[in-house]
Amino acid sequence: MPRSVELERFAREHFQAYRERDLAHLIGDCTHDILAIGTDEPDWIEGRAELERVLRSEPGMEIEVDDLTAQSEGALGWIAGHVRYILQDGGAIHARLTAVARRENGQWRLVQSHASIGRYSARRPLGETKGEAMDEVCLVAPLLSDKTEAARAFMRELDGPRRDEYSASERRIGISKEIWFLAPTQAGELLIGYMESSDFESALAAFVTSNDRFDLWFKQRFAEVTGIDLNHPPQMRLPEVLSSYDSRISMPTP
Image: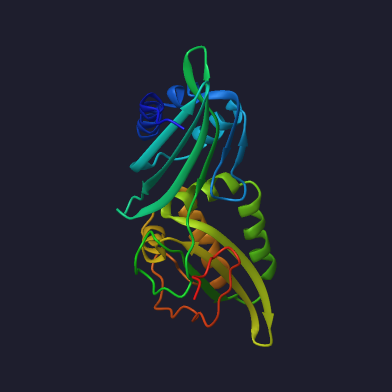
Protein backbone atom coordinates (compact mmCIF):
# COMPACT_ATOMS: atom_id res chain seq x y z
CA MET A 1 0.00 0.00 0.00
CA PRO A 2 1.49 3.37 -0.99
CA ARG A 3 2.80 5.85 1.55
CA SER A 4 0.65 8.95 2.03
CA VAL A 5 2.59 12.15 2.73
CA GLU A 6 -0.72 14.00 3.01
CA LEU A 7 -1.98 11.67 5.73
CA GLU A 8 1.34 11.87 7.60
CA ARG A 9 1.04 15.67 7.61
CA PHE A 10 -2.52 15.35 8.91
CA ALA A 11 -1.30 13.12 11.77
CA ARG A 12 1.57 15.43 12.71
CA GLU A 13 -0.75 18.44 12.75
CA HIS A 14 -3.12 16.45 14.98
CA PHE A 15 -0.31 15.79 17.47
CA GLN A 16 0.64 19.46 17.35
CA ALA A 17 -2.96 20.38 18.21
CA TYR A 18 -2.74 17.98 21.18
CA ARG A 19 0.41 19.71 22.41
CA GLU A 20 -1.27 23.10 22.09
CA ARG A 21 -4.56 21.91 23.68
CA ASP A 22 -6.43 23.02 20.57
CA LEU A 23 -9.59 21.04 21.31
CA ALA A 24 -11.53 22.43 18.36
CA HIS A 25 -8.83 21.11 16.00
CA LEU A 26 -8.64 17.74 17.78
CA ILE A 27 -12.39 17.16 17.72
CA GLY A 28 -12.69 18.44 14.16
CA ASP A 29 -10.15 15.80 13.09
CA CYS A 30 -12.52 13.01 14.17
CA THR A 31 -15.61 11.44 12.65
CA HIS A 32 -18.84 11.63 14.64
CA ASP A 33 -18.55 7.92 15.44
CA ILE A 34 -14.86 7.99 16.47
CA LEU A 35 -13.66 5.13 18.69
CA ALA A 36 -10.61 6.08 20.78
CA ILE A 37 -8.96 3.34 22.87
CA GLY A 38 -6.36 4.29 25.46
CA THR A 39 -4.00 2.31 27.68
CA ASP A 40 -6.23 2.09 30.77
CA GLU A 41 -9.20 -0.26 31.20
CA PRO A 42 -11.81 2.59 31.19
CA ASP A 43 -10.27 4.24 28.12
CA TRP A 44 -12.88 3.12 25.60
CA ILE A 45 -14.31 6.35 24.21
CA GLU A 46 -17.08 6.32 21.62
CA GLY A 47 -18.27 9.41 19.73
CA ARG A 48 -17.03 12.98 19.40
CA ALA A 49 -19.11 14.29 22.31
CA GLU A 50 -17.63 11.78 24.77
CA LEU A 51 -14.12 12.35 23.41
CA GLU A 52 -14.47 16.10 23.90
CA ARG A 53 -15.66 15.57 27.49
CA VAL A 54 -12.66 13.38 28.26
CA LEU A 55 -10.17 15.78 26.64
CA ARG A 56 -11.57 18.73 28.58
CA SER A 57 -11.24 16.85 31.87
CA GLU A 58 -7.63 15.80 31.30
CA PRO A 59 -4.57 17.95 32.01
CA GLY A 60 -2.41 18.79 29.02
CA MET A 61 0.69 16.70 28.42
CA GLU A 62 3.63 17.29 26.11
CA ILE A 63 3.93 14.69 23.37
CA GLU A 64 6.85 14.03 21.02
CA VAL A 65 6.61 11.96 17.86
CA ASP A 66 9.59 9.63 17.43
CA ASP A 67 8.51 8.11 14.11
CA LEU A 68 5.37 8.09 12.04
CA THR A 69 4.17 6.35 8.91
CA ALA A 70 0.92 6.61 6.99
CA GLN A 71 -0.54 4.73 4.05
CA SER A 72 -3.75 5.20 2.12
CA GLU A 73 -5.84 3.55 -0.53
CA GLY A 74 -8.81 5.43 -1.87
CA ALA A 75 -10.79 7.03 0.95
CA LEU A 76 -9.20 4.92 3.73
CA GLY A 77 -5.86 5.43 5.47
CA TRP A 78 -3.74 3.82 8.20
CA ILE A 79 -1.40 5.60 10.63
CA ALA A 80 1.18 4.08 12.98
CA GLY A 81 3.98 5.50 15.07
CA HIS A 82 5.95 5.70 18.30
CA VAL A 83 5.46 8.68 20.62
CA ARG A 84 6.66 9.84 24.02
CA TYR A 85 4.43 11.49 26.62
CA ILE A 86 6.69 13.88 28.56
CA LEU A 87 6.09 13.98 32.32
CA GLN A 88 6.44 17.06 34.50
CA ASP A 89 9.69 15.78 36.01
CA GLY A 90 11.25 15.29 32.57
CA GLY A 91 10.65 11.54 32.40
CA ALA A 92 8.76 9.99 29.52
CA ILE A 93 6.24 7.27 28.81
CA HIS A 94 6.90 5.55 25.48
CA ALA A 95 3.77 4.50 23.63
CA ARG A 96 2.71 3.02 20.30
CA LEU A 97 -0.15 4.57 18.39
CA THR A 98 -2.23 3.24 15.52
CA ALA A 99 -5.20 4.84 13.80
CA VAL A 100 -7.61 4.41 10.92
CA ALA A 101 -8.65 7.49 8.94
CA ARG A 102 -11.37 8.12 6.38
CA ARG A 103 -11.58 10.93 3.84
CA GLU A 104 -14.82 12.92 4.21
CA ASN A 105 -15.61 15.83 1.89
CA GLY A 106 -11.96 16.06 0.89
CA GLN A 107 -10.63 16.04 4.49
CA TRP A 108 -9.04 13.22 6.47
CA ARG A 109 -10.77 12.34 9.75
CA LEU A 110 -9.96 9.73 12.37
CA VAL A 111 -12.36 6.80 12.60
CA GLN A 112 -10.47 4.83 15.24
CA SER A 113 -7.29 5.32 17.31
CA HIS A 114 -5.48 3.07 19.76
CA ALA A 115 -2.59 3.73 22.18
CA SER A 116 -0.60 0.98 23.91
CA ILE A 117 2.44 0.68 26.16
CA GLY A 118 4.83 -2.22 25.68
CA ARG A 119 5.54 -4.66 28.52
CA TYR A 120 8.72 -6.61 29.15
CA SER A 121 10.14 -8.51 32.11
CA ALA A 122 9.15 -7.49 35.65
CA ARG A 123 12.58 -8.53 36.94
CA ARG A 124 14.36 -5.45 35.59
CA PRO A 125 15.88 -3.26 38.38
CA LEU A 126 14.05 0.02 38.93
CA GLY A 127 15.33 2.79 36.72
CA GLU A 128 17.08 0.49 34.22
CA THR A 129 16.21 1.03 30.51
CA LYS A 130 13.45 3.46 31.43
CA GLY A 131 10.59 3.63 28.99
CA GLU A 132 11.36 0.20 27.54
CA ALA A 133 9.86 -1.92 30.33
CA MET A 134 7.36 -1.70 33.14
CA ASP A 135 8.26 -1.43 36.82
CA GLU A 136 5.88 -3.63 38.82
CA VAL A 137 5.76 -2.49 42.43
CA CYS A 138 3.93 -3.61 45.57
CA LEU A 139 3.44 -1.21 48.49
CA VAL A 140 2.41 -2.63 51.89
CA ALA A 141 1.08 -0.35 54.66
CA PRO A 142 -0.40 -1.57 57.97
CA LEU A 143 -3.75 0.03 58.78
CA LEU A 144 -4.14 1.96 62.01
CA SER A 145 -6.45 0.47 64.60
CA ASP A 146 -10.17 0.72 63.75
CA LYS A 147 -9.46 2.25 60.31
CA THR A 148 -10.79 -0.60 58.18
CA GLU A 149 -14.06 1.09 57.25
CA ALA A 150 -12.29 4.40 56.67
CA ALA A 151 -9.94 2.62 54.25
CA ARG A 152 -12.91 1.07 52.44
CA ALA A 153 -14.57 4.50 52.18
CA PHE A 154 -11.31 5.97 50.86
CA MET A 155 -11.15 3.38 48.09
CA ARG A 156 -14.86 3.79 47.26
CA GLU A 157 -14.21 7.48 46.63
CA LEU A 158 -11.39 6.59 44.24
CA ASP A 159 -13.69 4.33 42.23
CA GLY A 160 -16.67 6.68 42.53
CA PRO A 161 -16.86 10.48 42.63
CA ARG A 162 -13.10 11.04 42.32
CA ARG A 163 -12.51 8.57 39.47
CA ASP A 164 -11.79 11.24 36.83
CA GLU A 165 -9.38 13.10 39.13
CA TYR A 166 -7.72 9.79 40.03
CA SER A 167 -7.23 8.91 36.37
CA ALA A 168 -5.84 12.37 35.55
CA SER A 169 -3.38 12.14 38.45
CA GLU A 170 -2.15 8.69 37.42
CA ARG A 171 -1.59 9.83 33.86
CA ARG A 172 0.25 12.96 34.97
CA ILE A 173 2.74 11.20 37.23
CA GLY A 174 3.15 8.14 35.00
CA ILE A 175 1.29 5.28 36.70
CA SER A 176 -0.39 3.05 34.13
CA LYS A 177 -2.06 0.62 36.54
CA GLU A 178 -2.89 0.70 40.25
CA ILE A 179 -4.83 -1.82 42.36
CA TRP A 180 -5.47 -1.69 46.11
CA PHE A 181 -6.14 -4.68 48.36
CA LEU A 182 -7.23 -5.03 51.98
CA ALA A 183 -5.46 -8.03 53.53
CA PRO A 184 -6.31 -9.42 57.01
CA THR A 185 -3.43 -10.93 59.00
CA GLN A 186 -2.98 -12.15 62.58
CA ALA A 187 -1.02 -8.95 63.31
CA GLY A 188 -3.68 -6.67 61.86
CA GLU A 189 -4.96 -5.54 58.48
CA LEU A 190 -2.75 -4.37 55.61
CA LEU A 191 -3.45 -1.96 52.78
CA ILE A 192 -1.59 -3.31 49.77
CA GLY A 193 -1.11 -1.38 46.56
CA TYR A 194 0.08 -2.89 43.26
CA MET A 195 1.37 -0.41 40.67
CA GLU A 196 2.82 -0.46 37.17
CA SER A 197 4.88 2.35 35.68
CA SER A 198 7.51 2.78 33.00
CA ASP A 199 9.58 4.60 35.66
CA PHE A 200 8.24 4.13 39.19
CA GLU A 201 11.02 6.11 40.88
CA SER A 202 10.12 9.20 38.85
CA ALA A 203 6.39 8.62 39.33
CA LEU A 204 6.80 8.35 43.12
CA ALA A 205 8.97 11.48 43.26
CA ALA A 206 6.38 13.39 41.21
CA PHE A 207 3.60 12.28 43.55
CA VAL A 208 5.49 13.01 46.77
CA THR A 209 6.31 16.58 45.71
CA SER A 210 2.95 17.27 44.05
CA ASN A 211 0.70 20.07 45.32
CA ASP A 212 -2.14 19.07 43.02
CA ARG A 213 -5.48 19.24 44.86
CA PHE A 214 -6.35 15.58 44.28
CA ASP A 215 -2.84 14.37 45.14
CA LEU A 216 -2.94 16.30 48.44
CA TRP A 217 -6.37 14.82 49.22
CA PHE A 218 -5.09 11.29 48.47
CA LYS A 219 -2.05 11.76 50.71
CA GLN A 220 -4.22 13.11 53.51
CA ARG A 221 -6.64 10.17 53.34
CA PHE A 222 -3.76 7.69 53.13
CA ALA A 223 -2.19 9.22 56.26
CA GLU A 224 -5.52 9.05 58.10
CA VAL A 225 -5.79 5.27 57.66
CA THR A 226 -2.10 4.25 57.78
CA GLY A 227 -0.29 7.02 59.67
CA ILE A 228 2.17 7.33 56.75
CA ASP A 229 2.72 10.85 55.41
CA LEU A 230 3.45 10.51 51.68
CA ASN A 231 4.46 14.16 51.54
CA HIS A 232 7.48 13.08 53.60
CA PRO A 233 7.56 9.28 53.25
CA PRO A 234 9.74 7.29 55.64
CA GLN A 235 12.49 5.03 54.39
CA MET A 236 10.70 1.96 53.11
CA ARG A 237 11.99 -1.25 51.59
CA LEU A 238 9.62 -2.37 48.88
CA PRO A 239 8.70 -6.07 48.69
CA GLU A 240 11.09 -8.16 46.62
CA VAL A 241 9.81 -9.76 43.41
CA LEU A 242 10.52 -13.49 43.62
CA SER A 243 8.51 -14.79 40.67
CA SER A 244 6.49 -13.29 37.84
CA TYR A 245 4.42 -14.73 35.00
CA ASP A 246 2.57 -12.78 32.31
CA SER A 247 1.01 -14.50 29.30
CA ARG A 248 1.27 -11.24 27.34
CA ILE A 249 5.10 -11.31 27.48
CA SER A 250 6.64 -13.30 24.66
CA MET A 251 9.72 -15.31 25.49
CA PRO A 252 12.57 -15.80 23.00
CA THR A 253 12.79 -19.13 21.23
CA PRO A 254 15.82 -21.10 22.47
